Length: 372
Ligand code: NAD
Image (cartoon, rainbow, N blue to C red; front, side, top):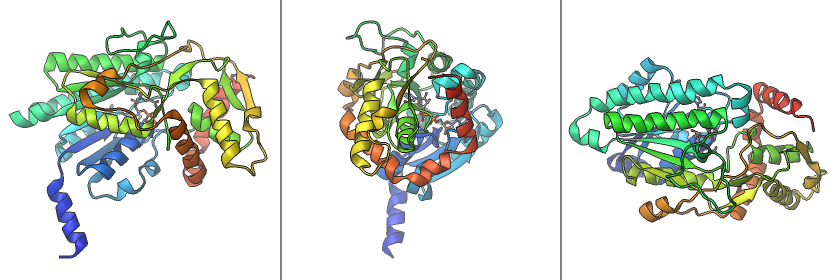
């Protein structure tokens, strides 16, 4: 037997779970798929509609693995969901598919209501029908893991306050309200129908393959081109930053070891003001691109009109996942942001491909409305 055949057989015997990941072509979903393929013997079905935010190039080598399958499906399409569940028969679902950009939710909330609320409802019903059809042990072992955000909790009042799993929901934007609705639906399906569900609420992520409409990749790419670096308001909004690969590890731990019916908050213990984040990125670019004609990159910082309803501060108490599941982040903000900037510098083809016409049109429209 050749090595590759015995490797393949070994892999086959060791396969543990089949995990259906929705939104696996997005920023966090692709990190989850890459993590599972690289670090476990599980197999993955990536179910994604491929909106502007979905990019199969983010999967890299994982997409070539025989433990990986892709289904281009909208989570609002009940018939297609049923077909996927019948064909693939997963042991767990990790639900990341969503419309995720707050500014887009303000200029056009309809897609957020449709995907985040109606889509989650449609998925829950497809999962419930499939789960009911399983035998007793498979039903008990099945997991539905809903991935959500700390933005559902709204703004923090005091400078020392932290979001815990008991913090009441008070969403401020159409995005966070739609995510809050989906969290409530998942908990209702768990309580009412007994679906074995777990919810996680995470702080701001950053890292490789982040679509360049979000703050950190936008700043990196604009700075490289000598374009203005737009700062909303005074840039004093505080966010708790988590490196995306730390989030992916946390999510896998939750889906495989988490307690059914529980919620886990996930955060990086890295509270930073937006302006501080932008200055850090500029300093790294000054160091890593000594030939850049745009140094010092911080001179490109431009203050623009703030987002309406902009929350001032988010910060997570991640004590529960640390105590109960033994998860802590591996990256500090300093190590993670350096890796992130280096990734964008070393992956120009990925960057060029996502900067399609439709993306550019959105950026133009968003910033034309925010005169400096
Ligand atoms: P993203 O926008 O990068 O990716 C979303 C993915 O979902 C894309 O691949 C897109 O094609 C897919 N999708 C959108 N609508 C769909 C539909 N109707 N059917 C099937 N697929 C669809 O988002 P992200 O930043 O990777 O976030 C993933 C999840 O994590 C979201 O639920 C988001 O609310 C949550 N979250 C994000 C952050 C963050 O900082 N990015 C923080 C906490 C929680």
